[in-house]
Image: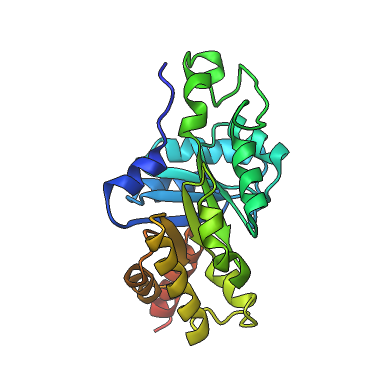
Length: 254
């Protein structure tokens, strides 16, 4: 069995902008359905969704039955958790709340086998096809994707040095946390927050680095694409359920 290629990177290279969504329901059935709808990528979120490693495996299997690329957000920049998530087959990892070059280097190192990093070696994990992927250890480092989240004005100001860390594939600017750290909690659409989000996208594009964001509405998604974001998550499975159910209930009640 051949070692797997990084599907998220392939998606990024295929078009100027790709679209995905967040997975918040912790339902592998919903995850599979979302993938079959045609999203380019789906974010399996361990930071804000109560997922354990068994759940992550189920979601990776569900996304793997579709053309979507899975992105797994780890709960923190923790080498032990990163090792375990990689061993169950996650290939593109998103790291929340990266603030410094040192944190960026630590994130990359946790995803790489020695001598390039500190990832522990095990030969019978899901990642290497339970030992059936003959060239896994030769190709794994090159195929692991790393996305770093910048969630404060200070982190965005350090973007150039963070993005320059070898092994950083893409950046992600979190609009909710960025606006909150600007003193605008819950005010993503505030002009000051939007100006910072636009400046962040412009800076990333100047560096030649892919940059992503999440949009809670179609209008925001279009605005973010105009700003220069190259991968845009459209709300979440939970959001789509709520919006659709609310509209159906309102229509039924006249």
